[in-house]
Length: 366
Ligand SMILES: *Cc1c(COP(=O)(O)O)cnc(C)c1O
Image (cartoon, rainbow, N blue to C red; front, side):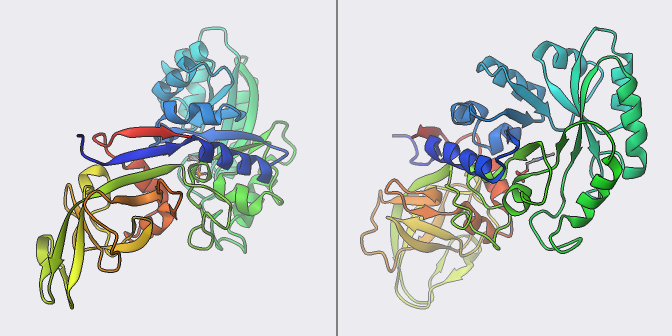
């Protein structure tokens, strides 16, 4: 028997979440963001469920190639654009759209000698200070691009730093959106501004011909803990499941695990689970929520490389072989949101789902 851990990808939930994105942005084209190998889910494992999206957005040329191999003929957007002049040939061959965020990328385009008609997304840095042209340089960049004869369309792109919270103006988006609007006011071209948080929280207020939905498609709330996946009607798309390997009865004063970080204050029943940090479970987590036989309990002591311990004192039905859900959904449909688990190690659902390691087998479920 293989070690009893596995990550289950739920096709119906992927489809459901994409439909929620469409409902929130009915006037927009909805792109499915599948960077980082579809947020750790696997591009090939989400493709069928996302085929009804209007496009895909990602970073790696290799992932773009894989989408083409799967048969996708629609739009693919490279969110960080090209990394070298040579990449333009690949964009031409694979028919990829790409972001332009710097002057050296414009230079590569100007020097590209093949006949081509590229759809590009000119990125404004409206306050995130990561990629893009600052507002005062944006129009000059647009003029330069607009003069090139290998450009078919220029979409105005920006990215919010705080669409999930109350910063930079009341809603977290007012300042950045204001700068963006003001800068492109009289320029022709489509717009793309919204990520998941902006789609769910600000769709009424934003003009975004294309929205770029990422984390919400994968069943994690972009503004947790303000809103949970239940509030947004999203479903978990990845379930990390394992089993109880062994059970220990311990007395008051006895400790559990490396460093004896947990000391019992009474007689306890402890379960040892086949999951550790070498599977992608956060070692730093403490008292993380976890399901055993559909009952919510918590981890105790330090997570080790291949195992972790859970409190079974109040779960009389738990035995060796009982199902454990680290995050996601149990086989009976009980849900433990990935956001709740992430919070117990001070991180976000994004990091957990991207961090499942290569030794964990994946399964697809409807
Ligand atoms: C990752 C990314 C997105 C998607 O963000 P989510 O918060 O996962 O919805 C959108 N736009 C850009 C530029 C990104 O890099």
